[in-house]
Image (cartoon, rainbow, N blue to C red; front, side):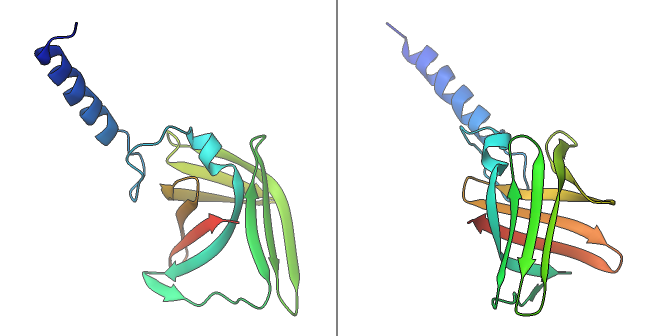
Length: 138
């Protein structure tokens, strides 16, 4: 039988472990799914910010990114006038706090702000400012 002291120590250890697991600025603080399992999905942008100001998302077409387990990355954008469909690769970087995306000859580093099974928020700095994009599972 476990003593009350042992139970208390176990409980405190579990609470400390659960609250210290958060790697991303906006969470989650704890998840049973691995980061790779959570990031592997088809993601639709739902909010975009530039230097903290929300930008409109044109909804007259389709847009998504698709991230696969085998490191494939796809960016798709389509509206009434044009279609972009790029394929490349991705990998975790900086202790899984960031991902590096390679599309054709361009390389982009995205900082992960939030990563759950349903939400994926990233930011990246470009000349002139910081873009932040919030995605939801497609």
